[in-house]
Image 1: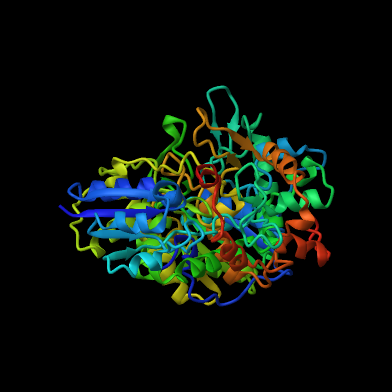
Image 2: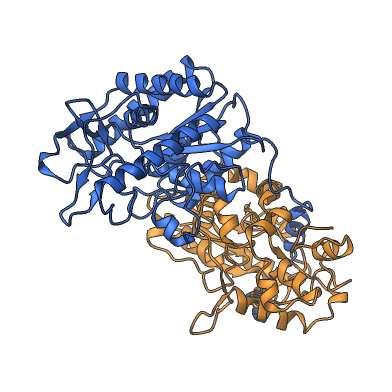
Length: 302
Length: 326
């Protein structure tokens, strides 16, 4: 029996499920990357704990979660280590932007009704002093064309495959298979189950462990469903040959019931959230650029 | 094929000419042609409506009476034989013996477009007068269009042995004299070339674009499974288009059928009934059509999206769940 330790961010549950489904003989322990410090305290304790395992499976991360511990440091311990890629893919959600606090080195950001994900159009509406109704009217096909939202696919693919681990894990081939099943992301950072399971299988192969056959998706549910779900806007979805939605779901991890918002409610809640911040201190290069360049998103005029 | 995203499927190799702002586009054909007609109008192209609703008729009433569904009120023309006969009837070269159908409630239907008038006509004279007006507008359409898009739908229809007149629906009366009429590759191929020659005889500059409807047959009168009849029918229509394209300059086949039915798209372009094509599929078809056949690209972005910047930034994000856990 081989013992393995898994370090992951959000898709931890899916990876555990996939590894256990395809190789029940693996003795697996796992930890969210952001819980390392809480669980193990000091780097020495953690490195000592890893001595109990044959192999470590880890995403790439730096020392921001636990000083003295990073993926590279783990690999330097002469412990067999399998690096696996994360799935960041913005192609389905080109309206999503992030508003980081100036000089915070990305550690502080505007939290919208859907967590770190903000709508550029909602932000634009607020900055222009539009009402919720007028902002609602910006969410339409001709505006997406004006803002070049349909061209995001190639950039998103390039962004995904820029990661060496992603290329090594065969993401280029997987990508099209995932797409043929529909939208494979809940939001730009949370993959659905199919990509997570492909990663789990490839982790096993790279660790020279058996991958027993079977349809894992028939046995497992994604643990990312409780997280925020950003819709693929209908006119954008149509370009991908997919049905679209205008239903935004809050992160309801830990809550009993999910909360869904239609567009108007989402804009309303976004305005409310954005107003809590000093937006001069939370720049958004994209929307700031539209405003600076005098782009009238509504009419297309400069 | 497996190496491209489904939405990027574009089976057009080259378009012999493009459609410009000065072109007048007319459409006809099976029910799938209605999607093309609507989409062309939505895109603001010069869609030729030669038979417009009478002045004063409201939009809803006009739509119910099939004004604007196609360029003239001929209804669905599911077979190429109907198209050829429409042309010949319009120019007086064919005068079918079949004049009218009478419904059980005494209303009168035009057998060549039985669904065109909601509730039918009050009298045969009224129907014949409307037909004459209609055929006049059909002549005007053929003579003024610059691009004619025809969607081939079926190889099975209903015809009359006495003179070969073809009607779009099974006759509603027992003594109508209509028989099942199946069209082979030879028939369809000949019909396409015959129609193209006729159209050019009255409009030498007209270009013809042919498409094959991806909508499967709902039933067959042949003694075989409807799926077998569907594959037979679509194969005949497809082969006839490809062959005709090689023989008639100014005639081109546009592969909308391939886009909708390609394995790469699985069944995602069909509605739940697995027959009707959904709007997402139509949009894919029209996107490819626009790319190759329409001069000038509509909807140019005002700004360039820089998604890479946001993707890079997102790598630093720790989401809510993580914040709570930390």
